[in-house]
Length: 313
Image (cartoon, rainbow, N blue to C red; front, side, top):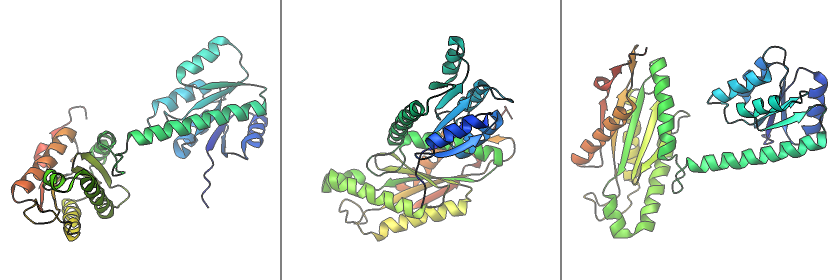
């Protein structure tokens, strides 16, 4: 059974302090421990705890420097940090809070008080995480929304640039969707959007495949480490699976609901950089040609001519 307890990282160079905190918190939380600043950075990055209890006076790197490093890393910047310290000056506390810590425990600490304050911070993080999740999800389909897609595309393009990996970008549009809404109503239209979203999830199911609702009746899929052949295959599978549903659509030339798909393919060479905006525009252009040439079809093209050298590399 998966342990769903919140995870706390305790970092202190005194074993007695670690033992006291461990015994006081182990019943409610998963506990990870470290004794150095390097431990703190490594474990926080690897384990992504829900909270870090961090001693300031570590032997190798000060707690302040550890806090600064964690807050500078996009992976760990949102992990709340509570300093545990024997220091008792206003300036010291102010410095920690300015670096991004959320609270202070002073040694010697009271375990009942520690439990309450830790519980409050864990509950606050849970609510914050939920709000962040909801802000990145399309409420109707449950897919990622445009905002989350833009963030994911930026990080994936950086990865592809560094590693020279292939990307395929699929732009999917439901054919004659306005007419479908006019004929059958917006409730049926919403149902159609949800059905298409389920098809996308089924057809692009690899761990690195990323699906989002791009807006209205448009969806977008980013396939990482994929060849043009793989991108075209996924696109055709999507088109075929939607067609096989035979959802009636009297406003369509086919008599049933269908989708058109545009696919842009890219694999940067050494010293080349993908222009994110142009990459998306190219997929959109492919989609336009798919619709102009009759709808219910896939148009796939390489994006190589759109790559521009990155002068910074």
